[in-house]
Image (cartoon, rainbow over all chains, first blue to last red; front, top):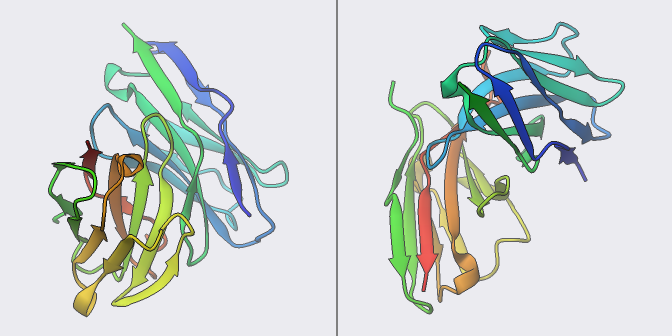
Length: 113
Length: 116
């Protein structure tokens, strides 16, 4: 079975600084997708970024980028120039092709002014 | 572009009652997923549909839970004889199987259930 592990229950960052959230996963599949979702308090789950496993290039979306290490089964999220609105619970998720999402336990990110 | 919508947003019920939740996916999406999320945890998969066919059910989905997606459009999730352990956020997501954004699931706001 696929598992996703987020080893940092909580992280904090100063506004305008950079923070990296860690995620590792376990799978025997070769075709899969990885995602980071953001869930602000009492609000909707929002897609931050996605990575296809067959792509070697790391995905980027504005201030958000990933470091995808396929051999190490590692998928970290880097947030640059952190903003107060980035404060949320961040979930790493894995998806084999045509299948369900498997989520990690989440990392609560606090942004300090 | 309308996102995924869910109704109701909140539901309080007494133990033993039946409840039904509705999810309307993004209009062109052919896949629809249900997840359950308890406080401080990541969502857990319950079931999913491709068009009107229910393709997979988690073992979390006991006999008291049933889901439908008539005509491949909206979906309903019913919980019969609710128990206090059913209290959670129920999330719906939809995706398009193919295309440049295929396999990406977009979530609704969720229905928060409290069983007293």
